[in-house]
Structure formats: structure tokens, C-alpha cells
Length: 180
Image (cartoon, rainbow, N blue to C red; front, side):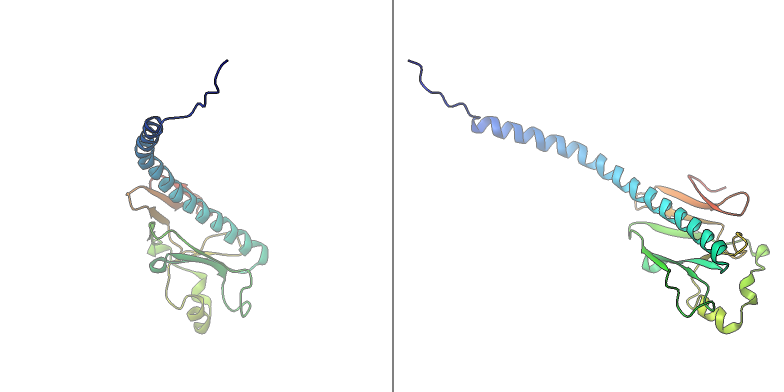
């Protein structure tokens, strides 16, 4: 008569399996971390590009200049209408960016600076950008304001970077791996 045999893993077998899992995780974790860091940079660049398209479309459809301001020290940016058209922009959007990302602004060519902002009355100029933050300004005719940055350089803490640069037609921005 056969006896009932209970089959189970021994403690040694369990320890060996756990050791193999720990080794596998320690090998793959650094590579996965680099992958996710790269995804953060790419996601931020795509979000900024989408905001430029949204700001430009909003300026055209509503007939009101719209601006995308960059508060670099506070790691945030904001899309809103120029003041003076309404007391408060109910459709303004504000985003915080990853603190590990650095955004540098490549300013506009000073010879192109004949901005329509200079035609705003002085109190409205002060309300439009009281902290003198870098901004991309979208005009109702679909163009980008002359004082808008030529490019934004996004760089993560590992030195990997992407550029959000003005397109060659000067009517939009595009993501590039380098800026020339």
C-alpha cells in the first residue's frame, strides 16, 4: 500500500531561487532606470510641443494673443491669454515639470524684436509679464511673436538632452536632438 507523500520545496531551494531573482533585479534595475529617465525627458518635450500647438491654435481661434511662460526657477510653465482681453483667463493651463530636468532658453534674435507687445499700453505690458519670464507668444494671425525664444534646451541630470526649436518656417516649434 503506497503512502501519501507530501511534495514541497526545501529551504535551500527557496533560498537559491530568491538569490537568482535578486541577481536578475540588480542587473536589470540600472538599465530600467535609464530607460525611464529618458522617457521623462521625451514626455516633457512632447508636452511642451503640444502646448505650443495648443497656444497657437487658441490664439488663432479666439483672436487673442496667447503666451506660454516659463518659470524656470520654480520648474513650471503656464499657457494663458494676454491680459486686457478679460480679467481672468479661465482656460489658463499650468504645469510643473520634473525637478531633475533643466530647461534653458535660447533667446530670440535681437534684430527681430519688433514685437506687438510694445504696442500694448504700459499697465498691460506690466501685467502681461510682471516677473519678466521667458515666454513664447502666439499671435492671432498664427505667427510666433518676434521676441519669443528660438529654442528651449531640455536636459536631464545625466546630460541627455532634447531641443524644442523654432521650425525653419518660423511658424511653429519642433523637437530636435540638436540645435543648429
